[in-house]
Length: 460
Ligand SMILES: Cc1cc2nc3c(=O)[nH]c(=O)nc-3n(C[C@H](O)[C@H](O)[C@H](O)COP(=O)(O)OP(=O)(O)OC[C@H]3O[C@@H](n4cnc5c(N)ncnc54)[C@H](O)[C@@H]3O)c2cc1C
Ligand SMILES: NC(=O)c1ccc[n+]([C@@H]2O[C@H](COP(=O)([O-])OP(=O)(O)OC[C@H]3O[C@@H](n4cnc5c(N)ncnc54)[C@H](O)[C@@H]3O)[C@@H](O)[C@H]2O)c1
Image (tube, rainbow, N blue to C red; front, side):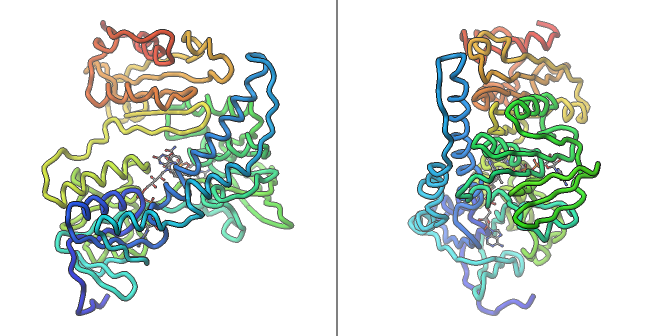
């Protein structure tokens, strides 16, 4: 690509103002650097406008309905009449400002940064073009362009008006029926929300279990709960054709079954947004699936990458963690390298599924001599007291040679919060003997950890 002769010189250019880019650009501007940040859509990115924040508002509302439905048999009678309008209004008024990022853009300008609207591309090492403007970055460029939904190559799919998470978040009405392709976190959180608001929901998952990246017990647990809530599940199912006619979506499966619904949500994963970024002009492979970064978030000399583009865990907390490291690096401040050993993630279904570190399978693949312990939440006093909605378990994965935890899953009501103590144990390698000899408050859900530790067996 021909370089323009005049380019504006600044300290740093940040490409993409999602959670990762916004954090990095804001901090660097506050530190007094001259920062230009390019954003093609909305400052705040996917998380604020179409992902974490609005979906968790939807989940909160759906969970309230589910709790109210648990009143019979435990506390009397309750009549529940779901109404989507307060959810749709809250998403518009509180979460997204009607998908207007003025507040976030002003916040960045208020810190001294310059926001440039448009799609940026690299035109050389430390050189970035946005529309007609070109910038050179004395210290370097931070790529934080996030990820985009990835649809599978199912015949007919690209010609129909399917939903991604964006349309599912922006919906003003609950569809009478919803077909969800993909049983990962996006598909399951949204499937349960819509089902609890009265939609007839069917989930089609190609793998043999739900939430395939996590422990098999988590997928099994959710399959049981969702089935009980009236969600139709097709596991190990392949969609071979999709069509949309007369307002109805029809999906043919490999076994010949045809499923029909008013809406189709495609939630089959996301892919780092790297196409058209001009990576080749910075000496990087433009066909790479993700940007390979070192522990200091460097992808090349004078080029850092943070967030979903790094492929290190597509979560907001990872993007922010990495952004903080990149900021330190740009400012030349000392600090530790990125450490993903206790990487936490929580799927906000009900029951929530929290996980940190390695699954049993990942640990085995790393050659670790593994010991596991598991306990059902219902068998802990608090789980038994809780009764309705007490589905869940705690599973621990230990390194039998080093006698420390390397992974944990906490599934149950609000059990994403239960994860933190275990994450700390994994991260700081607390010896199992220490964990066993702590006192666990009675009757809490976290006492289930003590039972799972006992189930691990081994010395001590
Ligand atoms: C439905 C859903 C629910 C989720 N829930 C959670 C959750 O509960 N917890 C959690 O931790 N994570 C959750 N995630 C994941 C989370 O949203 C992402 O990990 C997070 O948004 C990644 O941040 P990012 O800064 O890397 O990218 P993004 O948020 O994707 O931001 C990237 C930004 O870059 C801009 N951009 C892209 N290319 C260019 C370009 N060339 N020039 C200029 N700008 C560009 C985009 O417009 C965008 O604003 C969820 C995801 C989905 C889809
Ligand atoms: N609570 C959270 O932190 C949260 C919430 C939502 C999303 N996210 C993150 O966003 C990313 C995207 O989520 P996702 O659920 O879209 O992706 P995912 O990759 O986690 O799950 C996609 C699912 O779709 C299935 N699939 C793929 N192709 C298929 C096909 N042709 N037919 C049927 N099923 C098919 C896969 O087997 C998989 O189970 C994930 O990495 C996730 O961790 C996080």
